[in-house]
Length: 349
Image 1 (cartoon, helix red, strand yellow):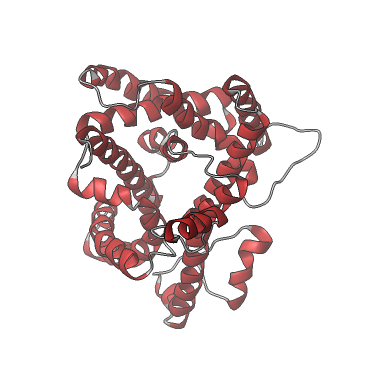
Image 2 (spheres, rainbow, N blue to C red):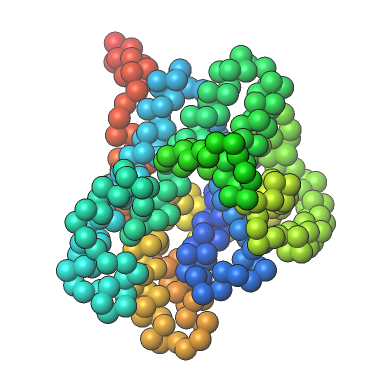
């Protein structure tokens, strides 16, 4: 029997993922309103929160090889799967003339399949860049863990150095002696590693993640955090070191406080559990739904309608992907690590 506290813990983490993916859906639905202060506030912690949640579950597994295989199954296999679907989606939409009809944002051409290798361009499914970046963050943090030799104080120092280097590499206003352009989102991965590490350190050294009867008192801090983020979130977030990491950390704590106190919400918890499936598929829903909604409702109201309909339509999409493509959507392992094979052999004997 599952311990009730463990079940609550799992539910509130899934709720946190659900709130995060809802924010991502809103961003990708809401292109016409991206310059308002509310969106700037969301941007300050939306993606850092995803890296943080991933860091909560960091494990060394049986060694670097086993670790890489695990992350390939969870991130690179889904990326490849959704990338190929995107290419087919673009070809079909190109054949149907959706670009000319205003449904598609970009025209299709057959060489698009090579663009990700040449210039990191993901025309028909931009959000799946996150799969590659999160894979890189995992590799970076694992490497730093090895370099630290198990000394977490040294690990913390290495994380700070890594994040700082990544931030200034990505800062277009900072004049480096030599311009550094790392391929396949390694530069962004370096910048985001501290948020991943924050999840690891909070899980390892604090009781913050445990369900407690005192959690409700932490709600008193939410208005303060919300005001701080809303008032201070700058338009140049990615060029402001202290705001980037400071507001990201405040937003992460706020989201965890909210999730721990609510614990579970049926639909949001469910989509949070399968948030990577939604990340890989929501663009296919947004494009046609937004086109139809814009014809039904005049003004900004069509954005809200699109967002709601995409959330609703994501439920059957999750079911379909789980049922027919579990090996390609991180629900089952497509590639088995050597250690896992050895365990299976021993169990059979």
